[in-house]
Structures are given as C-alpha cells and as structure tokens.
Amino acid sequence: MDTSTLPKLHENAKDFMPINGTDYLELYVSNSKQAAHFYKTAFGFQSLAYAGLETGLKDRESYVVGQDKIRLVLTSPLKSGTEIGKHIDNHGDGVKVVALWVDDATYAYNTAMEKGAKSYMEPRTDEDTDGAVVRSGIHTYGETVHIFVERKDYNGTFLPGYRKWETPDYNPTSTGLKFVDHMVGNVGWNRMNEWVDFYSDVLGFTQILSFDDKDISTDFTALMSKVMSNGNGRIKFPINEPAEGKKKSQVEEYLDFYEGEGIQHIAVATDDIIQTVRDLKSRGIEFLKVPDTYYDVVLDRVGKIDEDLAPLKELGILVDRDDEGYLLQIFTRPVEPRPTMFFEIIQRKGAQSFGKGNFKALFEAIEREQELRGTLH
Image 1 (tube, one colour):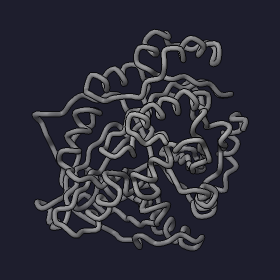
Image 2: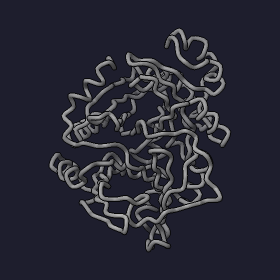
Image 3: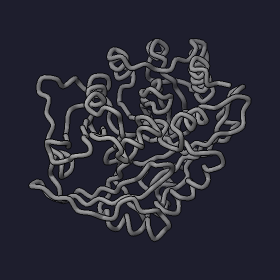
C-alpha cells in the first residue's frame, strides 16, 4: 500500500470513538516488586504509584512506573486462586490491559457496546482527594482488554486507590523512551480479519497497512499482518496471524507458549535510538542481532540517512524507508521466561510504516533464536 495516503486516511476516518492516546499498560506478573525494579533498572522507568495492602487491597498489589508518556502497571496476586494468578498460570507474565485515554469513558463504553463489544467493566467512578476518574472496559482478543480512562477531573499521580510511590535513593536516569508507538497482537489461524473488523466496527479504526505471507516470510516461516489505526493516528495496532510455512513461525511459537492470543510486542519511541540502545545494552537488555552483511547493502536500499552507519551496525539497529521518510528500529529478546513478549525501540524520521524492508532479516534473526530454543520445527 502507498503509505503516502496515511495522513488522508486519518483525516477521513469515521472517528466516532475519539481516543487521545495510550493511558497505561497493565501487565500481570508473578512478582510485581521485582518487575518494577527491572523496568526501573534496565529500561530507565521512574517510580510513580503503588496500590496493595497499605492502600486497603487484600488480593493484589500493583507498582506503577513511568517514563515520559509511558506508564506501566505491574500487578501480582497476594493469594492463591485469584483470577490474576490464573492468568499468570495460563500465559506467564504479559499484558492484560491496554488502557486508552478518552474524554468520555461512559460514551466510549456505550458506543462500543452498541456496536457489538463484550463488556469487561461497566462505567465506574473512583474518587479521592485529587478528584475523580471514570473508567469502563471491553474485551478484545484472547484475555486482553481495553479500559477507557477519563481523567479530566483528576489531578493525582495515577488513579484513585493508588498512593504516590517514591524511591528517592534509587531512581535510575531515563533511557530516552517517549511514548508507545504501537502494540502488536498475535491472534490464531484465520482470525486476523475478524479482529480487523472488530477494531473497525467497534472502535472506528482504519486499516492503514497490510502485509501478506509474501511480504513477511523467509525460507522457513511466514505470517500475515494488518495494521489498524485510530482517527488521530496515536493508537496503532498491527494484528498478526500465522501463515503456512515449512516450519513453525514466531506467531505459532507465541500462541503455543502464551497459550492463547495476546500482545506480542510493545514498540516504544525515542528521539535518539543510538543513545537509547547504548543505554539499554549497558543496563543488561539483550537485542536480536542481524548479520553484519545486512549493512553492506542497507544504504543502497534506503538511501541517504542522517546517522553514521558504523554505530547502527555496532548496535544492530535496522533501517527502512517509505514515501514519508525513514525509520530506525531494533527488537529486544523476550523479556519474560516464556518466548512471548518483547519490546521494539523505534525512531521515526518521517516514516509512518513498520519496517517492511527489514522483515526478512528480522525474521531470520528470530528463527535463529527459535532454533536455539528448539521450537523451530
């Protein structure tokens, strides 16, 4: 698809569901305290808020960390037999909630329900001395949910029910991460179009890009993907499904180990990917590595770029170009024990696409990891 049509698509989208941006991501994890420490130490997040026994909760605790516009809520159960615990038992650590910032959470919920959504949380108002927040929620693929968050009448750190969490003796510096660029969902065989229709019909999203198994394939594995975007372009959800290949694709591996559909990776933006990746590597984050030969021809493919090639090659950063400009991207290895969720670091220099020219090199790198795990068969 000609990506030069992207701005026009956003302008013409029937945007009956105005969304301002990503409010927060909630991950269900087996040890929220240690996970919070990991995201602070390795990724440069800051302490923001806490909820648990000290705030009156009896069944779970949550630590909230933030970096610029990114907020992660890390939640663990405090007892056995909870829904959170069952979720972790089934899926391992992973994203449960993608919270969307809206002006009117009741309108968003009612509109989604009228258009066929399944209810997760009816509109509810929570209050404390800092004001009130209205939230509501709907189910999406697998056990993932969207929560609509209306916070125009709230001035607190995060949400009512949380207290400010401060760690004055240990706040690592930022690594330059700015906001969530996109989130990729992996769904089952032949279910991509079903969820494309869901985002279009229920949330008013527009399909902006499509990749088939000819675009996203190697000698061994393949997948298909369609990218859905809301009206202002701030929310982008690529949706992947497996495609037939000689061996098991990364989507199939994800579905096997996550034991269902869910968020495969979170792409976070930076204004200086070289510095960000240097910082992340120095803190122990491991990245997928493409062969050095990738860099022998990359400039022939993408043309002139502002950056020197040497540090990109040294760090393993990929480059791609579309009609709007170019982008730089790199992918971490999975950050959980199961080979499921990982992060993408992305810097856009005008490009609105997702690195189609890098798919083959990236997938071959993933296949090398799968081979080491014994899951490429």
